[in-house]
Structure formats: C-alpha cells, structure tokens
Length: 408
Ligand code: PMP
Image (cartoon, rainbow, N blue to C red; front, side):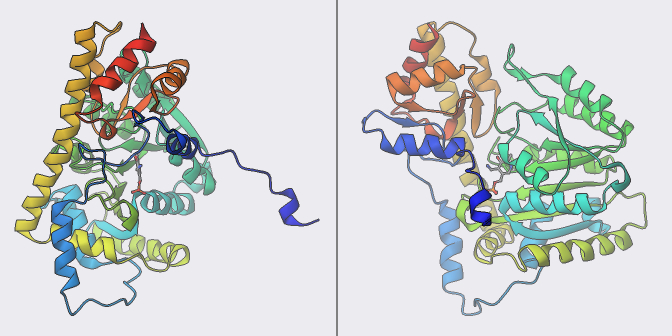
C-alpha cells in the first residue's frame, strides 16, 4: 500500500474556514472580527511608522548582507529582547542567568521550549503541561507534537465573563508536583481576561509550593496596555521570586512584524545555583535543538526590531506607536460597551472594557454567532471571540446593533 492511501483528511482549520467565508461574502456591510492582526480605523493593515524608519536605515546600510545569522540568532536582537521582557536592570541578566535564542516568532519559541522540556524536564515522571481553558489553539498542537501530555486548568468564568480564579488555583494545586504550567503573560488569547497583580502573586505562590515549572507565553507586550513594563509585570514578578522558568516572546503584534517571524525564547535559571555555569550548559543544548529544527533564524524581522530596540529615540517612537494601537483598541472597547448599554441590550457589558488586548470573549453562544453571520455579515469565531482590532468608528455601531438583535 502507498502511504498516500492511508493518510486521512485533516479537519479544516476553523479560522481558515471563517476567513474563506468572509472573503466570499459579497455584502458591503461585512465585518471581519476573526483576524488576529491589528487593523487601523479603515480596517487596513498598519505598518508602524517606526518600522518604516528602521526599514530605511537597513536599506541604506552597506554592511547588510544575506549571510546566515548565528544559530542563536542576531545578538543585538536577543540581548535587547532580554532587557525588554525582563527589564533593563534585571539581576537575572546581570548574573548571566538568561539563555536566549532567536526563534520563528512566538510559535517557534513555544515549540523550542516544548522540545527542550520534553527532552530534559522531569523525564522519569512524564510531566503534563497544563493550559488555561480555553487557550490559543496552537498550544495543544505544539505540545502534543513533542509528546508532552496536556491537560487544562479552569480559567474563564462564563457567568462573570472574567477569571475563574478559584478554579485556576485549585487545578494548579491538584496537578501532580513538577507539572508544567503554561501562562499567558498578558492579554490572554482568546478571552482578554488577565489575573490582577494580587492574583498573580497567589498563582506564583501556588506554583512554587507545588514545584511546578512556569512557562510564559508573551505575545502582546506593550500591545495590551500600551505600557511595556505593565504588560511584563507578571513575568518580572516570577523572576524576582527566583523561579526557574521560560518565556516565549513574539514581535508579531507589538511591532506588526507578523510575517517576518521575529521572536525569542528565553530560559531563566534560578539564582539558587552557580547560575552562569548552568546557563552555559542549557544554552549549548538549546543550540543543538535549534540547529536540527531550523539551523538559523530569519534575519530581517530581527534586524528591524534590533534597530528600534537599541536606539533611544526610535524606542520612544515605538512606545508611541504602541500607544496608538492599544489606545485605538481601548477606544473601541469603550464605544462598543457604551452603544450596547445605550440600547439597553439585555445582559451586562462591563466585560468588554474589563478585558484587555486584541481579543474579547463576548459571551455570545455558537447559535448567536452563526445568526450574526447569517443576518448581519459579521464574522467571528464560534466561541464568541471577537478581534477588537476589526472594529472601527465606521462599523462599531453596526456591530453593536447586530449583537443587540441576536441577544434580544
Ligand atoms: N501565543 C499566543 C497566545 C498568541 O496569541 C500568538 C499569536 N496569535 C502566538 C503565541 C504566536 O504568534 P506568532 O508565532 O505569530 O508570534
């Protein structure tokens, strides 16, 4: 028999199907709230002005060529990335406790971390990775592909449309010691619900008491609140507490470098050991994994980010661009909530402004989602998630009315 005869058809990617249906829709009113990418107020992709500047600088740099980067990536990029996520004065950096490799955006960083943990972490006990329920769908696939067992912890409360904190803490407590706990650093995808700083402290303390391993997925730093330190608070708090942990960092959203695949993986060792020595061993193993997976990471996106991150003036301009994106999204949250409340749409709508980042979990049921698509040409995922970036001053009232119609 041929292999080609036994490979079954894979199920269609739900987001892909949604995009195809949107493209086919001929209505002029159609609204795309599925996309996980920033759009400006005219529903167009936005090249950050600071990225355009970095582009020009690179374009005119006679030193730039198309040679391979080192296996660990562009050093100016990885060291700036450490400072960005951990804070410029982080003792972990000063004590040489951070191993960082440039990766294929955030996805590649999650994957490299998953591979590394599978190979070295708590092997005799076949540890389980715990995700929030729900989580970014790719988490399931990435960890399953490297044969790490997966389970979930409660996260979203359908009644409050906020965090099910008790459920989350209980599940972390009940997980076998030395499990891997995956955490979204900020702007949780798909719910937009983040723990408060006090809740993070309790989460850290529970993870510590159970000897679990925290794995941070950081895909929205600066994009969520507009404040880079605020969005990295949880990670920095865990590092301060002396955890050994890892971080998958993406530059897709905060630089708008989606297709350039700029990201970074960081492993932070605990201050408890002869730290710099440990880091050296870990770095050597990560390099071997990286070599067999991708050999060397792609140069262009990392060069853009490094150009901005290592220049004070450009960095300040980037922060400004971040405030433009996060500010527009927060304005849309406000506008949507106000409109729904003004119409007296049944239910409570404070969650729209309580939630943060690219996405909002509206609380609409699958049936309502399908009706909105049918009747109003608004496209969102079946779990009721909307991409806030798809809303703008031209369509937010229209969308609110469409919601009102199916809720009433
Ligand atoms: N993690 C989460 C939670 C995300 O939402 C995303 C982007 N959708 C990523 C990781 C990685 O995306 P990318 O590979 O484009 O950086």
